[in-house]
Amino acid sequence: MGMVQVAISLTIFLLLVKPVGCYLVHVFDYNKTALDRIFGPFERLIYRLIGVKENKPMGWKTYTIAVLVSNFIMLLMMYAVLRLQKYLPLNPDGIDNMPSALAFNTAASFITNTNWQAYSGENGLSYFSQMLAITFPMFTSAATGFAVAIAFIRGLSGRKDDLGNFYVDLTRSITRVLLPLSFFVALFLVFQGSPQTIHGAITATTLSGAEQTITRGPVASLESIKHLGTNGGGYFGMNAAHPFENPTALTNLVHMICMMLLPTALVYTFGVMVQNKRQGWTVFAAMSIIFLTMLSVVFFAEYKGTSALQALGISGNMEGKEVRFGLAGSALFTTVTTAATTGSVNNMHDSLTPLGGMVPLAQMMLNNVFGGKGVGLLNGLLYVILTVFICGLMVGRTPEFLGKKIEAKEIKLASIALLTHPVIILVPTAIAFLRPESMASILNGGSHGISEVLYAFTSGAANNGSAFAGLGANTNFYNMAIGLVMLFGRYISIIAMLAIAGSLAMKQPVAVTVGTFRTDTPLFAVILLVIIMVIGALTFFPALALGPIAEHLGMF
Image 1 (tube, rainbow, N blue to C red):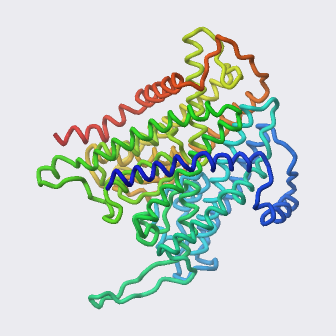
Image 2 (cartoon, rainbow, N blue to C red; image 1 turned 60 degrees about the vertical axis):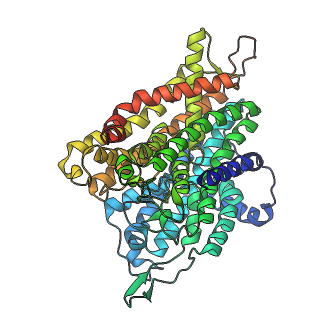
Image 3 (cartoon, helix red, strand yellow; image 1 turned 30 degrees about the horizontal axis):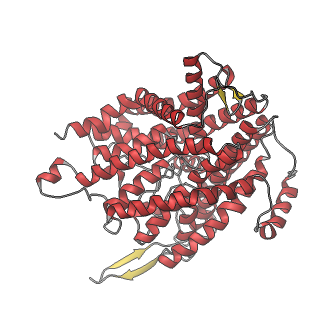
């Protein structure tokens, strides 16, 4: 039965890639859609109010400034809401203001599409905060990632420094893609049992006669964009393991489809927009092989369980998992949520077997397995550029990608983006182990404790947001450190990739000859996989050896 669940899910993913990818091309080529009549008048009004000219293109520098300024303003707004929620409306349960360090961490988390939570949503946020400081940036952060990815694709296929208009890309991402899909998914979740109300908590009497307070709120609307926008972050502390967020096995399937729907389709969109579908499928194939490999590891690790469970005659590791999802539904969700850098969890990753727990950790370290809205594609293309450069050195030719020469400037920018990721993971992790106060937050000793801290900073750097649990992260150090890691992990790579796009857009295409190294073949996909694995192993293997690998070997 478990294999059937996985097979059905993967089949649905594949069937939706092409039609959704084609629709995205239609949207970002600024073509008319059926939704123009609904959203067109509102969009034009917004453009007039903020002084945006729809047809005015932006070079990479202008585009980058627009991304950073708009996101910074939203960050300040979110921080203010969290710090003042006690005095704002829609707070029927009287929840107090969020502390400053935690408010910074939360605002940084949701503006970067990370959605790391060092608080419990039902107890730490008012309804107003849940809607304006959480649900609102779930739309805008996902749309920002979309816009940047589309701008980079335009740079690859363009002939001048014209990456489009960020404000138009942001708006169309929300109105043409995220908002309509979220509306229908939210209705389905309400149908399945998720609450959607602005009334306060209610008190119920249990069968034993005790009173129980049941928290509710606008859950379905948050859950829909949470997964469609690859946001993560739960309304409740239990996240997608909570029955109000994820009531049935059917909603579990819908959550996974929503997480993978747009990231996978965007890879196909890339192939269409650069007028080389084979190139898109080549990148898709490389990502899919990594995804299926990771899924196989966590799937069989959890089905096998640990030696201690086997000694008791227990088959499989059900610790930290919901019975309604089972081992298969939990293993697939674990792989999907970190492949799509969503961060939503329907089981406790801290309770996975050591090898099972290494899978989400490894996927976030690689940070290029489909990924979140736009980010996964961008990171994948970073490795493509590096692979092209290495292959060019091996055969003694100037590297080329999609007819554009890859030169020193592009390699330097790509190296900055690639090296930033391990630096902002490993350095803060090392600092945390040097501070007695930070060590006191680790609730498990030995290798597992190392994995908990490593997972926290990896989750922040990859803009994933899932937690390994077992770490008391709501301290000033972790709130500030992980908050900064999330900001660096998001915006350094965005700036570098837009700079690469601007540089490539100005270059004239190079004629294809018999000596041109093709990047849309199975051979290139294999080389790309090898480069990803080698770089990942050289960068992160020592840290993994101290954490999940040492824990696994210590069981025997």
